[in-house]
Length: 133
Image (cartoon, rainbow, N blue to C red; front, side, top):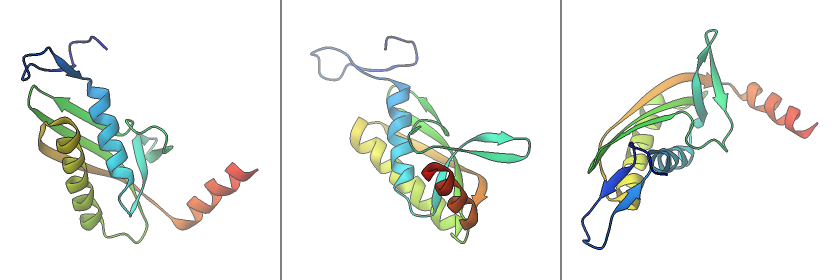
């Protein structure tokens, strides 16, 4: 994981501690999936329809910018129909900020939530049916 985008901290004097951007993305993605009201992560909008990613791609739908001591996060989500979007977004922002700061020691300066779509209950049932068959 020796790439230029890795976070480097030399606080201990014992050597360098490197945390890859991908690790910060995974932490943010996991923290987002803990929020009730988030149906999934979005890989972007394809042909006017938000593409929902599987829950196993925790870093997908998350973009991070990591500096030496700070991080900024952009989260692309699909919300469940009926969920109050401002509440879901605020809960996601707070949970992501707390998770990253606790696990990495970085200061999270912003968590931008981009709602890419709404997942309707019948869509969830169809997805479950195709998984069973």
